[in-house]
Amino acid sequence: MHGNIKAAFLSIYGHLDGNADVTEHTFLWKDGFLNGNLKTTELEIEAGARFEGKCEMTRKGVGMADQDKEEQDQF
Image 1: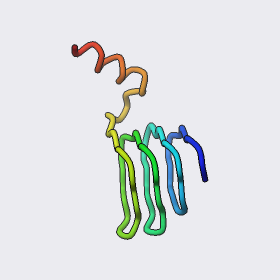
Image 2: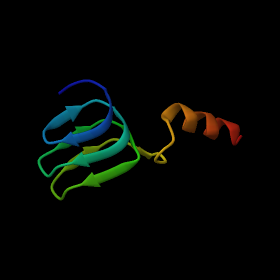
Image 3: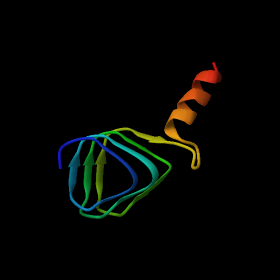
């Protein structure tokens, strides 16, 4: 698949070429390949899976917009 994804949960079994914004759990299975950036609260990568990109781990229970505002307030 080519494109960006926004979801609560994401399981990648095949090829994803794009960025993923996941509010809960991301699982990358052994035959999966993520070529892009990932923002998630939980991440599991099975042996044999491939991930090329950046990963940003967020806090569970905090919406992405709320977390961005909290980070801005820290400065």
